[in-house]
Length: 313
Ligand SMILES: [Zn+2]
Image 1 (tube, rainbow, N blue to C red):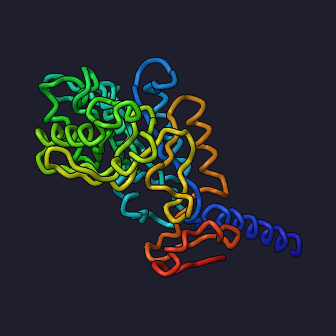
Image 2: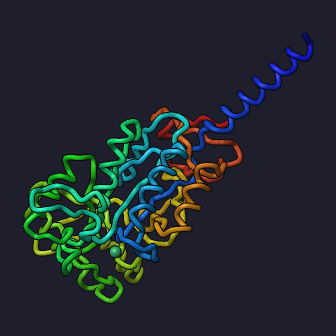
């Protein structure tokens, strides 16, 4: 009898410990903003294979991640269920390998959108979404996913199906070299997109090559004007292959938001690591409270002390 009770006690303790360690919220933790480029046949620094992207999505689901869009981060709207980890899937350079269609408008199952749509169908409980950083004035096939006759159809599909579009400049300009063309690169990109989606406003920018202009030009990335057209970006993304700080962490810098690179071993390891690490962002499920362990307290950006209800444990 005693042995049975003791075994039961051990089992309950282990179960409690597992639940406790899995769902302990930490909203000052780090999270991943994953960046894909080409989807293709061979893994390279800028190419992820079709199967590789499928595997990444499966790993994200298994690791309790919850995908969000870049505008959610702009608004600090990380409202996801308790115990879930935010993740941002981004795709740079608007190549045809990301979005390919036949003449009838059928999406190729081997392009990024095809892979994601298939995953959505098979996993309706996984709220998949992604953000495309586009190059509307680039050469084929990066000029809004190649296939000029289908551009309109593709862009409309993206906005109707829980995807987001953000700026990556007109044609991938190195903005250190073209520091006097920053406003032009941003506004002309926006204007070309509006030929297809008249009211769509891009509100964030990813730096081509991850290269920044000199410090005294950086404010132009956030706001400016060209030929009478103004723009305002809330976040500027780098390509430093590091996890992002929590937006409540005082080290979170809206001008240099960190992204992780999606190539084979790198991304698999990162997804794995941040699904287990005590340093990763885990939601408390309540948009009005900010929950974190006492040992992380010094990371808190003081401006949130008044704005939000803090739960420290
Ligand atoms: Zn790029």
